[in-house]
Image 1: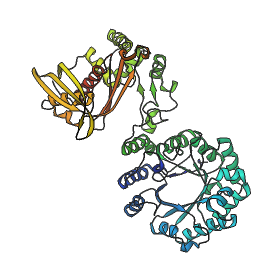
Image 2 (image 1 turned 180 degrees about the vertical axis):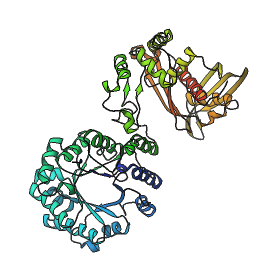
Image 3 (image 1 turned 30 degrees about the vertical axis):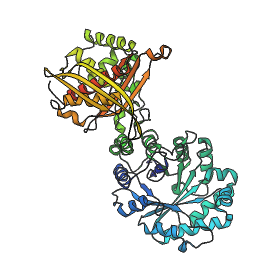
Image 4 (image 1 turned 135 degrees about the vertical axis):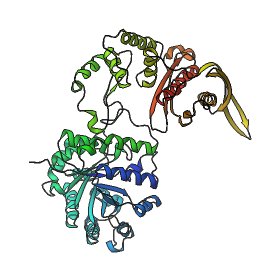
Length: 529
């Protein structure tokens, strides 16, 4: 027998909008919806018509999906009003969405306190509203809000709400753990009881992550019989977020063997979709995210790397390529020859295992880490170190000197702090002296250096400094402690790289990282000195 079909419902464009710091534009929503459709998601909830101008504009501009169904979200009719006279329901029908998801109360406490109506009227609200959607030719879904809390408090009434939705013609009845406080064993037991009343092929699950159990709760519900799973990309959502579809997809398909609307080829785009959303939101991707994080298949310990080189199954639960990720070998003071050989191979430097230069490189890494450097997370600086030792690097520029001055002054009644960098740099044998102001010493150094280099190396115009981290390594030494700087850069090709510097002087450490970052870009752009 084939595995049961699980239908996937994405609510990123509504639930994800409730994440602190997230504010989707119309363009963001349409772009993300396009990625979800291409991926193979069954239902895409685009927003709540009438709630705000952005959502209204999205439904006006909504494309015709090739694989997914567009869903408009709203609520059941108001108490004491006919469904035909409810303006909120009418806006949902006017949206043109082929599917409508209505949220309704299933916890008696919420009915009497939040809605201030009777339990019987709430049942009529659910049935009437869904019936109106079905009569208009729409696929109707019912989000049973606070269902698990409601079931624990009054199971007969919570079930009566689901039965009202069933009478109203709901295609899907979705059980919501709205407060996120239910645990997996409770979800599985309660869903099992619900499935005796409502067939599993009409049940869905919608979990929040307040106890870090949203994914586990969703899987427990699937085990108990539900056939629709709701969630958001990267677990976006209010408070602690929603169930993370990016984690659920490979788990459902590769670990549990369920069929979805995705093929194996589609699943290989999951990592891209996860990072695409972070790019749209200008957020740094979570390096440690399951499956798709940059470190999800990263190996640091020498023994681990040695074993992975022999057979990746020794320390990897699956092949990273199946979800579009890749293996990553880290180099640190814990590294052995296997780490270095594997990382050299990644950057196109293949050496025999018994080449004496491998041992020299390992010793250099360990010695430099004693000085404060780290190559765990600064692969660009490691590559430059290795290339310099093994084959030499072009000398694109040489620093003669730099001076940085910070000034704090009043300008037109405003207190401003400026940094000024003066630099002497040799490029192709010529000395260039440049001066630049920046909003900090690193910014000023960067601008002064680029003034000297851009004429010779115009490709640097696309370089962007995207992150800057400083860490004090010896807290007991006070202001004289060694400082480590990590600098992340990107360019128009969407390449990202990180470099490192270390010194007792934070400006010198920053210069080292900046110098490596520029050298790395020039080398990978194929520039000759």
